[in-house]
Image (cartoon, rainbow, N blue to C red; front, side, top):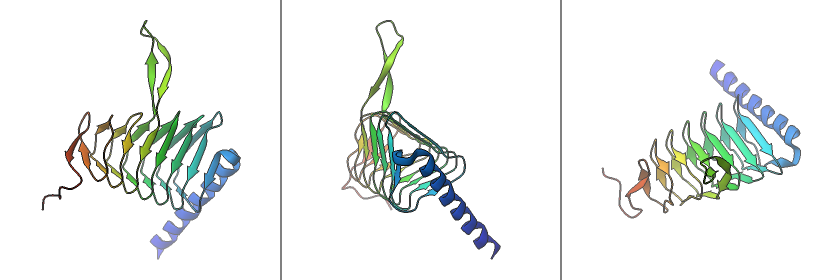
Amino acid sequence: MRVFHRSVFRIVLSVARLFALKLFYLRSLTTHGVAQVEADVSFFILSKGRVELGHRVFLGRGVEIQARSAELAIGDRTAINRHSRVIAFKGIRIGERCAIGQFVTILDHDHALGNDGHMQGYVSAEIQIGNDVWIGDKATILKGVSIGDRARIGAGAVVNRDVPAGCLAVGVPCRIVRPKNQKEPA
């Protein structure tokens, strides 16, 4: 019985955190139903940025969400686990029922370097992640990438190119190791 009370308390506390965040960010943070926000989740919504959370979104401990003049949308029943970062300068759209592992980084921008080798701002391109996508621990999703529905990204992969629907992608940089119509070995 004690475990039940502890879990109910955690859920109530996470809903209260979300309510406090919505009060602080007013129109910049919208939700479509209840979302669970664990402790130490950081939101940075700057310069007309917008964050949209779907119904029953889960944000684990230490997750960092940033929207800088961009729209970041997370679909219904998507889980982003501990210490992951999602940083949008142009736009990121994550589909419904996605499972994103721990320490995952999703960035829609890179540093732009001038001829002299010094940083000259940022180069951004939108990221689209489809529905029912699984992203393994410590994977990195880079700018301009589109990941199709039901795709799987292996742990530690660096995704710098599009991944078609239903495919498995692994490695640094990622490569498709199993196309969508090939069955998983038994």
